[in-house]
Image (cartoon, rainbow, N blue to C red; front, side, top):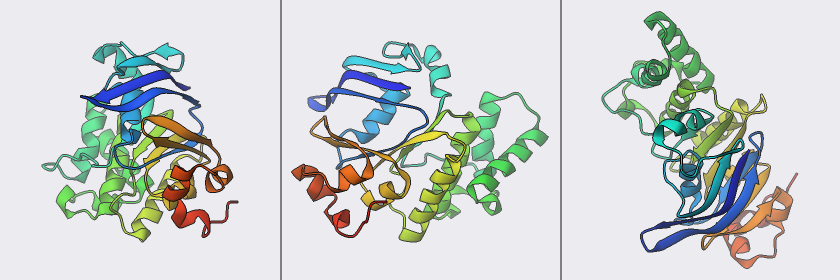
Length: 247
């Protein structure tokens, strides 16, 4: 369970979140929508303690993490698999070594076991053939899949956190990433996807949150989002309001 209790956060004089309160169960499929600079990625960083709130509390599985030290946050972070938009692969390491890095960091296993685990993870995300390639040789979609494999190597997550996972991808690769997100959640593991791409959010999520001016304007299901009378949301999802038929 993730709980934000009246959380406020600012970058300098720019207040991004204002008294933000919500709770998310780890098995939920949640999309956080909103324009650029509305605090979507900030929420993910707060969940894993990469930044700290200016006010309010953040509670993960009953633990208040607001003032935990870096050492104390380690076990909290292992509950999540987080994939940031940039992917953040090491440019100097090939695909195999990028994924193996996390296995060596968090596990005491032999090189033979590492090799097998890397291949298993790359097979799960559908890019085993790229095992010897360098990051610069990967397509955007492959880069994103390798980033997901590396995040899986770091832990056995209770929940996935995706930061703009389809941003910059062509429609085919974006659709493939959406399919992978759903595939990885088949065992009941939930996820939070932050995105401005409404179509992609609607392919994967069951709950939708919409941020505007540091506040939560909407929190509900797909049908409620599509038929909302909130002007700011209507403008944001205009492209799908009459093209998308909620199921």
